[in-house]
Image 1 (cartoon, one colour):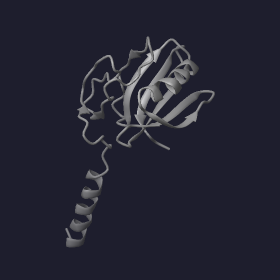
Image 2 (tube, rainbow, N blue to C red):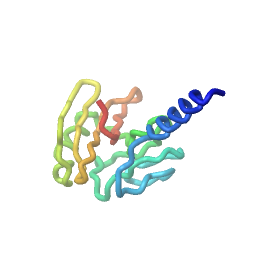
Image 3 (cartoon, rainbow, N blue to C red):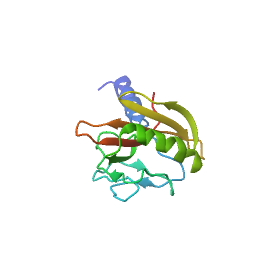
Length: 143
């Protein structure tokens, strides 16, 4: 193998290693765990944990998170429609100390962008599922 090919492979390996999922500084990762906060997961994907006291819609049930979505922080289901979830978080997030950066109520999806005290930006995403439930995701901000 030529020296230039080896250098290119080393550069590619370094770039690939640096493209992992973001983690919140100063916060332990949520490896395979399940608790009432909605961090139910049977995977080995490292996830940010919900801060202590993060608001959870009353009656929401933690759900298993997909292994292929490391940007998801928590997932719940509820029998309340997505609009009820949106309305709850519009009030609950500021009351819990989270600054709302954007409200995007919609037909199929509702998104609330908010800032954590450390400056990280997350989203609450609510949508109705095919089985008549509503899903609530907390995730890293994305376009």
